[in-house]
Image (cartoon, helix red, strand yellow):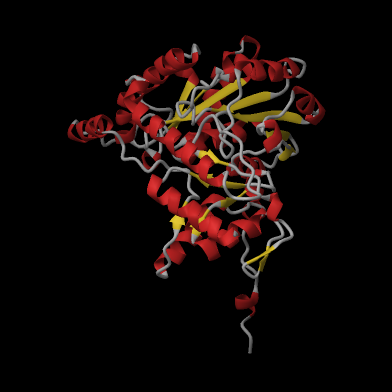
Length: 402
């Protein structure tokens, strides 16, 4: 006789069932799986610097261990770290925050989730200029809000216009997420472009702006501008940043935000019930990282620029791959729609997901489909890999597409 319990569906919540799997992490996992099967996979799917954390930061962490930092830290972060974050905001972004407006979290992703959870109600709308980082839409879903995409294309350098923004706003709009330098496109909004978008938002005081500036220091001659530096936007903007990308500290898991004090207080309250304070040793090391001049990490930024130019040059020689010159981050986001509808090496390519899977299976190169970022004509290629691996990866891609 059948056991009725065994045939029952697992009673997971609607919340988790409605949540998509992170495409970037899924592709990285698929690449690792194939590697374990003996395949020579070159992974260009994860947004993770391939440098080691600088020694001066590691030394600060070792010092913290020796100084016996081993107890729970304050939920919103050590006071002297929050002071260092205030100094950083003033020095790099001309933003005046006090330590009560700062919350330190377990990575910038938690900072973003905190903000969404304390500001959004079921049915609220969140505007996502596309392409956008995969977790923005997922976090909106978790907060039971509805996300509205504003499309852009490689022809507009993946930027939205004030007219598009105005058209997307409804009485239900509560938040908009900006991300410059952008993941996945590498696009950097100029001050004048941000000011033009702010002019639209000035007419809609109910909308809050989340400005994700995690790639701020990784820019190539187009310095990033903080949205909160626009005077009319300061009291409505939450600025999110962290140490993962610029300092090659992805695994240290420290992010932070600067916000109006009432929002920071709410994030602190939420975090107190979810994770409490972030890692104590990583926080001590972060003080050293943030107080250091940007020149201490310039060698990484210079190398990323060399790699960007290398990848753009090599991709430019492949028929049908359309690229723009990304001004920041460490991604190229080529339009590959030329190949849609074609059969390549026995595989029919219907969309970017098929194209990305083709590269993984036939070229042994892991990339991420643009579908995950709200840009279905593109794929994301991370050039946070050695020049040797990048050359070999593009050689393989060219061979398959030929």
